[in-house]
Length: 108
Image 1 (cartoon, rainbow, N blue to C red):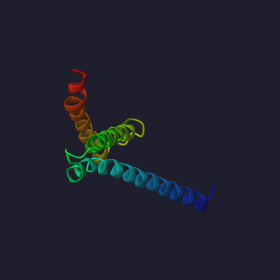
Image 2 (image 1 turned 60 degrees about the vertical axis):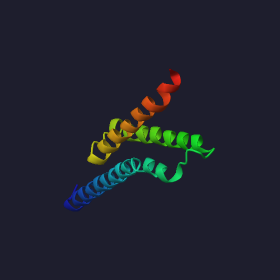
Image 3 (image 1 turned 90 degrees about the vertical axis):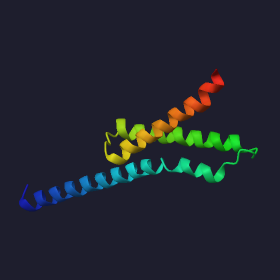
């Protein structure tokens, strides 16, 4: 391997590493965005609306999927940056809130 090939291989490795880092930043930013979506329920939910239950169920499903996505990034992809940790923590709080205030009272 001559000097030019070695230089090209190093540049390619740096480029691929940078590409992976950028992809990880995008994935963790998507996870962070999922914590703000449930706040939009304040604009859409009306307790007297007949579709209120369906709207709440949709938000609960979204929160569960956001939690699963954040957990996947944290466990499988070993993505341990601040965005992923915050989204995992907040989505887990949302999920615990749903379980405590919605699911468990219906089971009792």
